[in-house]
Image (cartoon, rainbow, N blue to C red):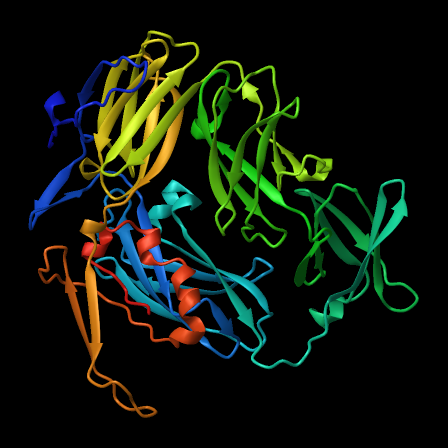
Length: 509
């Protein structure tokens, strides 16, 4: 067993906040896990899951191409390459949730490679790549790797649509009817007789059989509620061949989501509220507006970034009032442009986390634990780095931590009462760029002829310009055509914090 402990002197000095008196006693420790050491690195043999990442050679494929991938399997706690599993299961799942192919990939020190040869008979659509180890199945699907790719036919020849002639008919009195024709022979040449249809509205699924009409077609005529924005239609033949299509009923639909700090708006406690605006296709949409109360009074204004995300502060939420977001600051907006915020709970706690330069400021607030002792547990990937004990003064406790005392990645801050019962939690991302590998790449020539041999020189160093070993993946693309897509796609740096980068960083530009 190794025990890690620090005194209060290891903490950064606390900065005085207005009208806040604070008293903090802090302990720093790591869980008691069996460990062993090699080459100045500490490895854990505790019962923890593995984390998986697949480096793909693209996001869009045609059915005559090959999907190449490199697999990286790490320990979930510190992202060191895992030696626990020797085999990785990788599945290619089609738009109808059928496993088209499955590969068993040999892992050596957490690294493996593989591919899927696509088939011209594969349907177009969004495919799921799923990867897991047998060990990871003990921890549920949260630790499975999942990524969607798009697959299309190489030719532009139009294919017969199995679900066609879709129409939405307004009948009046807020009644709408959805009609569509189904052609099961387009997906199953052996289909006969009745057809089973599944209709999903607002996360509720209905099923019904369809009979062939006089025109040898299967016609659906179904009542759709006026409030419904999306409908998913799926047909399934008796030979278990399926086809699914989702229809957008309102292209102007905006999904505006609110995320109060610590999960709830609490009566009398200042709270920061994050928001995200999504259009009908699921992409972020830039918005602006103002926050109003139930009397129409403007409390604050907000504006998102280009991805539709942002935040605002609600100073003193009242449990007896209601709050709304009104878009575009138009007082005469109709109700469709007004979105309700979560209701204010009469009793609760808020844990605020603010980063300023190299300091992280924590403020725990409660409207019922006025002068009680509480704990703030700071952890990352299951390892506890700090346990802060202090007493609330008039319902408030504040302290600060240094960013260099915490690892790179998502940090969980959990507030508990004096019985160790969790009462609030906050997540934040701690960025430590000094722990990343620097990659320099150069070519032996400025220009090349077609299929001419290309020699690349790749240099990997740490933040002290010292050379480090790395396992690299290389993907060469036309930057003018595909560079922007590569900049925004998921990569190993966004999926795994840079702890792993010390061992592996694929070059994909």
